[in-house]
Amino acid sequence: MYKAKFKYGQQTSDFDEGVLFFMAPGQVFGIELEKGTTHRPNGWMILIHPDFLWNTPLAKTIKQYEFFSYSVHEALFLSDKEETMLTGIASNIEQEYHANIDRFSQSVIIAQLELLLTYSERFYQRQFITRKIANNEILARLEDLLSDYFKSGALARQGLPSVAYIASVLNISPGYLSGLLKSLTGQSTQQHLHDKLIELAKEKLSTTSLSVSEIAYELGFEHLQSFSKLFKTKTKLSPLAFRHSFQAP
Image 1 (cartoon, rainbow, N blue to C red):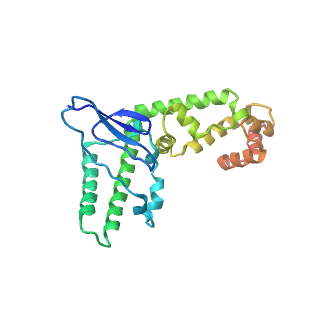
Image 2: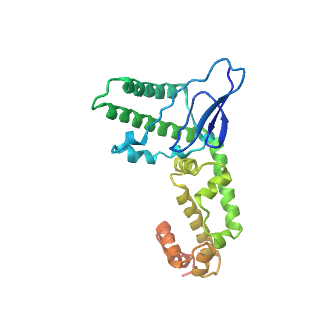
Image 3: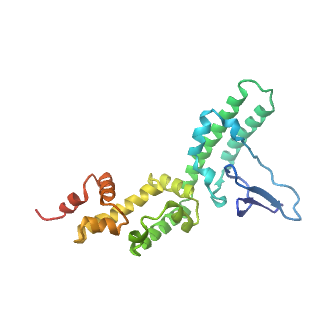
């Protein structure tokens, strides 16, 4: 038995088997072993210097992997099969690193890293789907948060809440929230917010006598043109045309 905790940034979590997480440059990581442990935890750690990626396609595409900004409690929990697969890739990288360096060395390691990141993206998508109860709870809390925010009149005072604000209230990272929504709804957090905003706009246009300008103001828009543009993008109709569709001929 061993008792250990790892610290990722300012957060501390129990050290569990089969866990994979990613860190971006500048983040802090450490492992603290408690007294009385009989053996140390083992695993892989791959550290990549930014210069190693310079002038390679991965230098640009690595930014698309949002899990580098996930929090410690949003780590990837691997099945035995998944863990074996990623361990094999890490072993290949290690072997190539210790082999004689030639002009193919960097390309081979980069290819293995891309494979590892692609599999990790697949496994995260699997986790979004398999952890339905936890994820549906997050979505329910999101809907309650937006409903309360809209009813409070905060839209007119502060505008649409930022993704960072919503994620902080839900106690998850912005990247994880976006990844979860994309997996379950096919939309980013910002797109989801805009859809909710348009639903509220439709309600006001069809059930109140407020002018389009007044509705735009209540929804947090400083300029009527911005509201009209977003509404037409989402509905293919202008706000006035949508309102007229509810009026008797």
